[in-house]
Length: 226
Image 1 (cartoon, one colour):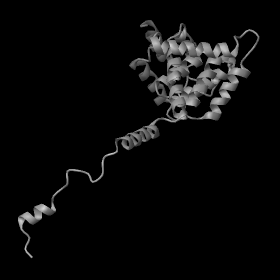
Image 2 (spheres, helix red, strand yellow; image 1 turned 90 degrees about the vertical axis):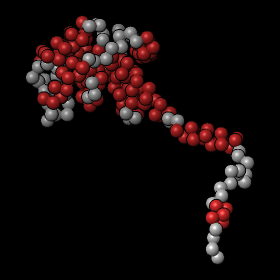
Image 3 (tube, rainbow, N blue to C red; image 1 turned 60 degrees about the vertical axis):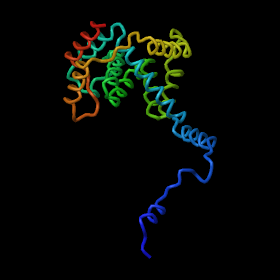
Image 4 (tube, rainbow, N blue to C red; image 1 turned 180 degrees about the vertical axis):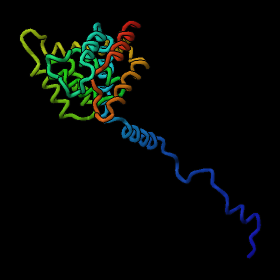
């Protein structure tokens, strides 16, 4: 049998109405279920908040009074590798904290962790708090709990402020800075280049070594622009 054009067009007809009515309620429920699956888990949300808070605290420390001077003292031992001559009495603890925060903000998290650990080992509670946030951001719950325990149980004495007050003070300061932008300036391109230069110079070691005078000078210039 020979098919005509009319026969072909009839077979190609596409109906414009659905044989069943569209269920708007079911469609909305499917959209809601898809949105719930796409939402971050509590662990993901906690990690994101920790990373945001660590960034704020790091900028706060970097912009703090005397930050550049402390890094300058740390640079006095220029030429020593990161693992050399790091006894507590030979290191400016506040400088190690500031330097760690600078390394974090310039994209060197492993080195930041090393210098935070150095400062925390010399009883810097701010460094221990940064380590807590650092590991929490990475999803490393056990390490985060360890540094929180160090902060709240191993770094207290009769002259220090209570643990809750110390942590609440840091978190309140971070919240204020995040909300108002006060002291919230990040590293300049010149600072980033200075850190990258040090990292490249020690390519055989994964840890960025001590700051040198050039980086300390850049940090002084950064502080003078505030």
